[in-house]
Length: 258
Image: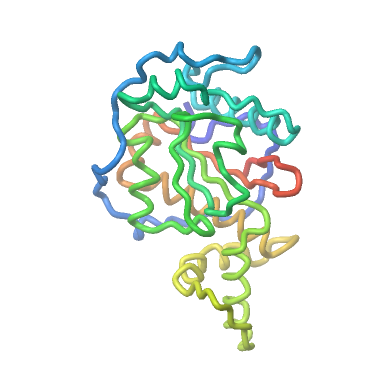
């Protein structure tokens, strides 16, 4: 399988933003804390809605990604089914977990991946930081699902009107132009600096500069994850697919970024 094997006819947006390697930010060790690689005891316990496949029964990362996009469509249409949320399914996970995908997204309260993709308990392993800011400690959490629990899909999910990215763009632009920036009670100097590569990569892109920076940050993070010591071999061998998307607060839809 290609490391970015995606259906080209589904909400695909070619941004043209270049990707930069961020391998220098990453560390080779995998934190052994948290999680359990035990199997799911009783996957049949989940009461599935007709025409909604059980994610745990899908074999390829492409099929899983397309099923997540289908779930996102249900969410956007206001027709989520909330699979894998009954008590019997929850009990079946007590002895172990087998998430089908890992998701790295923003802490924004309006962008919960489990809801955005209409999934349930034990389906996704989610890591969230303000503005999808990526550092060595975060990278170990993000890589845990694929490296230790064998999730075959890793999704980097940015979102429209991200407050952290907007603040970083304002701060970096002000510094570049030598203008005064309005002070906020909650300062994010480390977040601003961490998002500088995305700011630089988005320069010259058409459209809204913050939107371009959000997409650039997704692309940079995807590249960094593909180069992570815990994941690079999995990506090279086709055992892990890394995809990116941007969530619209207005429509509820995830647009694929490549």
